[in-house]
Length: 161
Image (tube, rainbow, N blue to C red; front, side, top):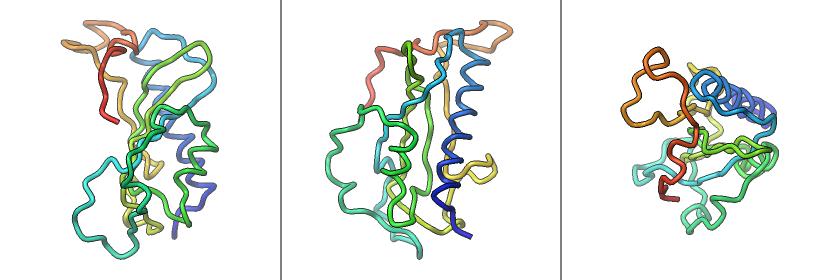
């Protein structure tokens, strides 16, 4: 069975909720109710032969100029649901919080598929999404020793996009 557009949208929602739970558990920052996403396309090495049911979209090989354009969940689904195919994996990482939104990065595999067998992260329950973060401060051990920390402890980090 292939992933429907509605299931893909629901899995994005569930993955985002898991990110929010991690932030609430580890960070002292107050979480706003709304979410926005930064979509980073083609975050994988795709030089190996494609498997049956996988496709690369040629426009994803061009430099991406919109990696810091905040998108709603609906806009993410619109951008990533292509001809019934979705990235084989998508890493969700919390990026920052402002007064209105939690911004998360979506680092996407360059290979798109409509084959459930090619989707990663099924054991987590919301394929193809995998949650990361928040990024731990340098030297952080655990909640018992170091307590909660600021999600923005790496605000000045430089990311390749």
